[in-house]
Image (cartoon, rainbow, N blue to C red; front, side):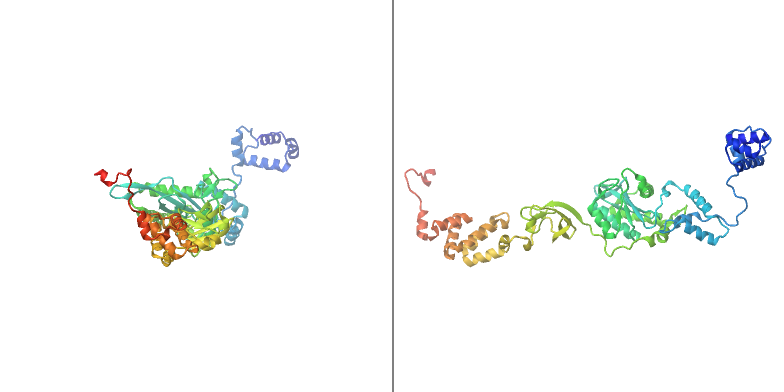
Length: 507
């Protein structure tokens, strides 16, 4: 405004336009334009008294306004905003389509200027630009829903609310689960993708431990099971930045809607079981997605899903993802690895090696540096062993062929006393397998003695209650099995001696 005042003062003093430009330091054209504005305002010959703000308003209030009247209304900005969410669609393409319908419409620069002005008036949650089919934001509501699990005692348990929101259409899916654990997390994703009817390009969770093992701005470490689930559906996981909730503002608003619409309106309702709660959640999602119209675009979330998102979503795979958990384990010296209180064999050369175990409800797989070295059917978690013969060293396989039935059969072939002795050994051990070695040792004594002698030694061991391999071998080494029954009976005759009181003493 200082230059304007100087130009007017010099003009009133009779200085030429060219000289005014030289003195003020502006072009002559600028001087002429300023004088025209001053003349239009009616202050060319009067002293300029208003303040700078008042003078600026007086001279430039009409700047930027176009004269004339357009025969066509403004473009449909909500529709243009929706179209921009589609892949490969730009403002240039939309302006070309607009000008083809309205040849006397806005030029491209004015078209873009008007759209940016309309977009700036949208709410904060709409300022992020999300392409159709690009992102699915997932999170849990902060509050839980009390659910009665015992009608007699009135015992309640808090249920978690899982929320998933598509970026472009704001389509919302919610469901209740007992926990925020890995199994419920994965199953909620499975059902959310089925409800959506397709797979987005990215899954955007926050940095919860069930999804992100190590939160990092540049290189977050994703839970291996969660990453495997994403790979099964052909998508990827892109966690929000730590402490940046606006990165997932869509789901934050979705959680807020779920808490207000669902938890707030149903705060006086008592739910008896998770299925009853999920029925109420499903009805809430139906009303929100199908009945409630988004005012800015004048369409429902379901309509936006079908029109904008559906063509851009990937197809669902033939089968849903089956939950698989991973554990890091070290193989024992017996070449077995423990998974959920059951032991599974691996090739014996991997004894003492650190391995990765992947297990589902039906199978167990063991990996070393990404190579699968063993696969088993899932055991019952009873502390027993599942062993594949090919995993055993050759020296161990000879023992692996022996079973209780075979031991009983081999013992019966030697003699009745040997058969009875082996049966007693197996019966009196806490686990029959603990008596395998003793029975095998007794049976293999036939390599050095005859079957008759071994049966006699077994009979003598039973008589004296010495049910061990060492006792039978000692009987054979000392040839006690060769003694006649009479001699053995004589050995058991009462000993008479003056220093022995005898039974009568105690009467």
